[in-house]
Length: 289
Image (cartoon, rainbow, N blue to C red; front, side):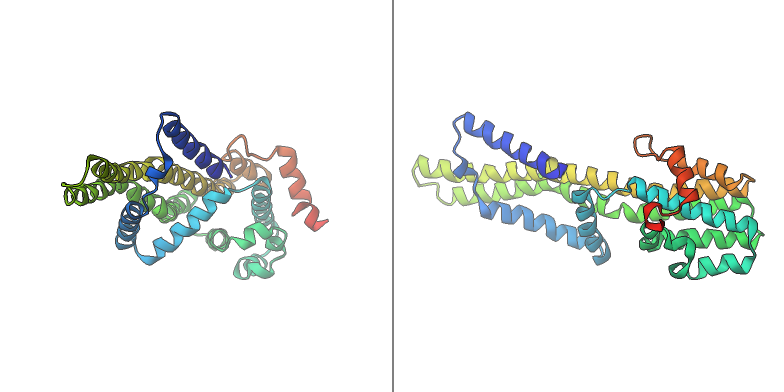
């Protein structure tokens, strides 16, 4: 929603200012200039990126428009799952724990947290490292190093759409110059026409430069900033898992280990201690009631 509001304000101020200076909006309507710039930008984007990144860029844009970041319920679900697993690690046999991580879809612990279960990548991440814990041979610093390496790789992959769209945005001003030069070439082909005709042709050519700059700084840059924000916040879930499990491996009881994870959440979004304690007593909140 904020993207749409910001875009409306940006376009409104640009067009409003242009009209206030006595400009005519119809002069800015140059569909072929837009086709040249947009087509060249999108074509270069497709050439520069594998299809997986192209598709993920569409997904990332959708997430940015919806501001699809973890909410308090998702944090509580994750902390509830981690607490349930750590509690069972202390009190139950290896076979019982393996039943949860080998088939999380049928696990009573994961079923109380549908937001975690829906995130297959996060569920796999949790199960993989709980499995390493129950094996019992790995040391906490070794697990932490492995987690850091995997999370770095995951974040790099998640940021590919950000980098790809940012690169396309950086190219738009130069592509706008190409469109403007093509417009000037067209105008030079009609050098014998009246000044009024030449003025219109040159004005249309300059619109290409304006569009290139507009698409770069007023559209792509805000979109990529939002993509980076959303995906960074989504990645926070993995940091919570890491800090909680490492604290548990270092000897903290489950309740204390959860606090290590909770403290990694941004203060504005962090669930209260009372909410976490309620989640431990009643996993899934109202859903389990």
